[in-house]
Image (cartoon, rainbow, N blue to C red; front, side, top):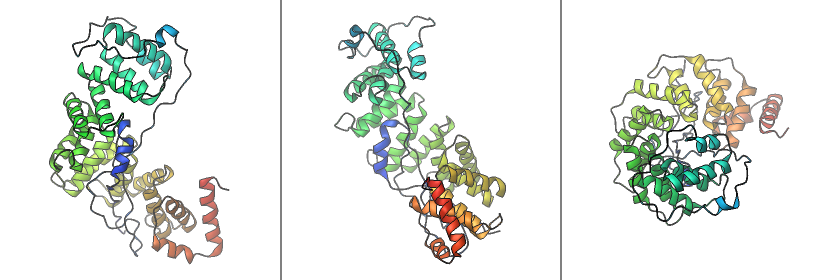
Length: 371
């Protein structure tokens, strides 16, 4: 059986990194490579760029909550007299987590009111961090990056790693302006030392980028490993790519496959595609064509243009499955619309009998909801 070749692990879209940096979850993404003329769904690997791509993360949906009293609304400013000292002792009582309970339930205004009271009366850093989160994401209160940064800083000064991470990401993104990437990196480093996986991961990206710090691939790999060991799927995918390429670490395809599997199991789409390729080829893991095709099918239905393109080639050429040109060219048309061009499949599609061509086009239109 023809071996399938892997997708490209990195892109140079660093602008996307800044666009989503405040969200705190930045993922490496795969991009399509040049297509060959042979019936092989996976093109030759392209060397990764030095700058990783971003993955956007969605904020929780806003839900209705009780309106606060006029008196509490006046207390929405951070305390001006609060000093970066140890927080006052928080009573050990069942009401301690009411603010986060309300937040998790989508009762953002209620969470705001409770957190504000605890922050002002008890100097509670967790409540301060929650206030920063609510202000920065316009949850239950009008978005205000200045106030968000003030609350995050008060919590960070009290040693809260979540606040350090959030404030660091805001400073890198320049929210509020001006940006201060050096200070942002310092805060990420402090948060990472306290065990925040996302901080270690994003700090690794900065070492990979080589602007705030001199580029240091080995240091990036160390930070990715720290985050990966703590279960961060973006770091698991990034470190897997390093192991496959032998960048910053000794090349180890078995370890790469293990990390890809771990990230794929928690729905990292790029890892899912790469792990499917590893399974198909038996690279670093026992060969399993059935599972590989199932994973590619799943990724294609999650709108991965790379998976759609590879699945198209598999179906069109019958690589491990019966030939199905109608379904194959459907996926080709869908992937092409997403920007994953494939001149070889375009040429084959042009030679397709009119009836089969029309069927593929109809299926693609149904996918997009235009028929």
